[in-house]
Image 1 (cartoon, rainbow, N blue to C red):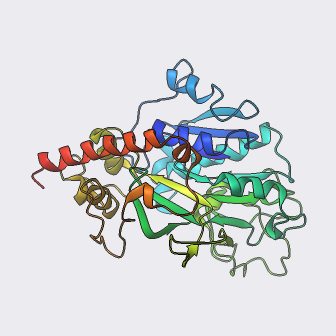
Image 2: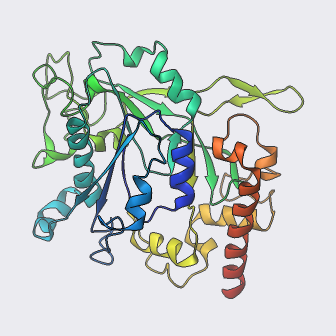
Image 3: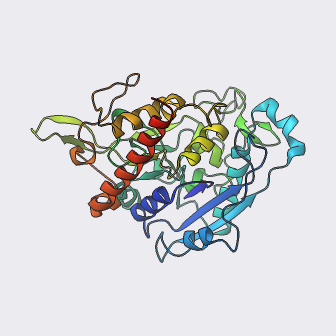
Length: 360
């Protein structure tokens, strides 16, 4: 598994670690010194070699058989004027280090690669299934045109009890090692052209979408996938769990195969800093109400108020919170109901205090 890491909450890190404990062979973290919006220009390092954060991250929380590493990406300001013309942001460059690390950890074509944000994790059931079941996309000889396994992901918004009932996310993403850049056979899977110095998005005609290889005529074995391709490109199979039923036995929906623990902050400053500096910055993030920052945070505020029936756009909350959830749930939540209650009370107080302060 490979992911970028920055100010991610320990609420997220530990739930992810519990879900995948001892199932990852290696976890490749990458930290960078810039935010994605470059506002402010630099961010302080969190996981320095002597830091308590790094010691805990590598202490065995992902399991005794999982090797955890952290690499640093130092962004070069001199490249920025050229890069920005092509949309080559710091995330694209930092993710290049994921496959570098996988190669150092002896990843093979028979292994599986997962690229995610840290707040996204496949269910433990799906991770076990991927290790042992015959899944067409993971068979040898994949032509790598559309090799992804794409999760069907349940969204928890800020709290285990704030569940967006009718919304599904579609990360993380899994690919067989035979189709991973620097791991698969580059002699068979010739690279296409990309935006900037061999990185960034594929150019039109070189696999920008799985139906467009017009600049690579007669190709039968397609280019290998970079870590950023995992995240940004279409091309693969959505993975649903089996149907589940509600308390009355009525068929409800396909079960999810992953969880998204979104906006799991511990302080108001953390969430405001995120919305000020992430890929789509909100430049008034330090001053406006949290509910006004995004529809997601409006759902979280509604949840704190137990206003289950209020819609935000086309989305609404699962009435009754975690106790009403049917189907899969994170192992940490199922095992620790007292934690579920404590986290919800924590975020409830944070949100309502901030709304009151802003006069909402």
